Length: 164
Image (cartoon, rainbow, N blue to C red):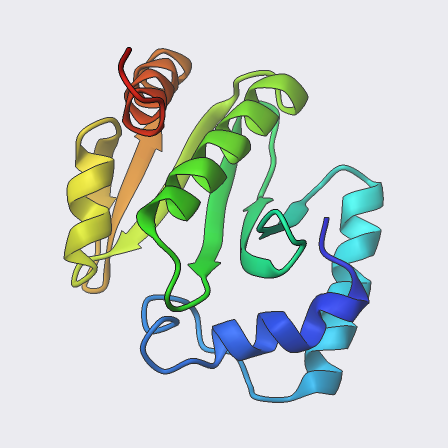
């Protein structure tokens, strides 16, 4: 889980003009980021939200992803951003992790999320498994159920596991 000590890394990701262009704007203010994490930790204790920092084998941070707006039957996955220069296996592994966490901790609730319309690569991926439920000027809105998550997980595992 994200800690206050991760604030500088998170801020560097969320204020990167290229890699954060599809996320909600974040002020480049370290103190505000620390305060946001402090407030988040209270929501985490209540099991209302989860914010994960993932790292490499040397414990160097690579990115973050968040689960929030948790209700009786849905949750939202978002705030997903990976450090520039990482290979695509990082995004696959982080997606597998978050899918497993949601299945075990949130008991396979339905995931709802949005993707910016101009984020073509991510849209292409999510359209393979999730259903578009609406749109506005900026976003497409998706939902993905338990069976579709299982298909996605199987597909992602097939990519990262070498065929024998």
